[in-house]
Amino acid sequence: MGVEDKSELATQPPLVLKYDTRLSQLDSLVVFDCLDYLVKRTTAPRSALLRMPASAKRELFGGAITTTLPTSIIDASMRLMELSDLRQVPDTQEVFLFPDADISIIVEVLQRVDAEQPADIAKFHFDSLAHDNDAVEHKIIEVSQLSGESSGNHTPLPIVLSGTQLVRKFNHAQPDELRILLAVYRLQDKNVDLVVSMNIPMKTSDGAIVTEGQFAAAQETFSIAARSLRIVDYGLFA
Image (tube, rainbow, N blue to C red; front, side):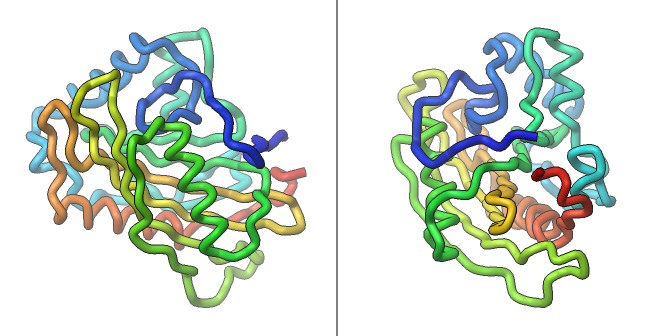
């Protein structure tokens, strides 16, 4: 299985969701169809979204990685295959969408970047995402290394970053405000950085707003996913 070389920042192709250009290259019509399908599945107002959902262990990359995610979360690759047979989510990514909010969680296998210090590693991936998103502004709020004992199968403890990005969606004058959560697992001997990211549109040009309380619920979902992630089969990175 290949890994994406991100040693240099380069212009990426069009995105599946404007909030993360690394997902795929589907036509914008397919993107809107996918998001409309997800949003229309609930009649609840956005102010009622993002309460803590039921969660369960989920297998990623054919069972090579496991993590705990909401049971209601939707596998983007399955939904996109229903909408179009033109392109699929790359095999180096697992992409999940919340069924009732424009939030995505992405698990991605990337080539290890040159940075060595934990804060620098996380910053590189955050800056790369901002570049991919054509962010007009981005800022890191906090970087930390999760503490505690590593799991029995030696899954490394992740470096965790939170930050903000301002992204203009489809050339709207007012940029959307995104909260970005990142967890980076450095696999030194495999030359791999495993990156989990969550994209939360806090305030969008169409007037949608996520409150701090709702953000806290999404943040807890991300924290559970990051802390529970286990690498079961290191052959994934061969």
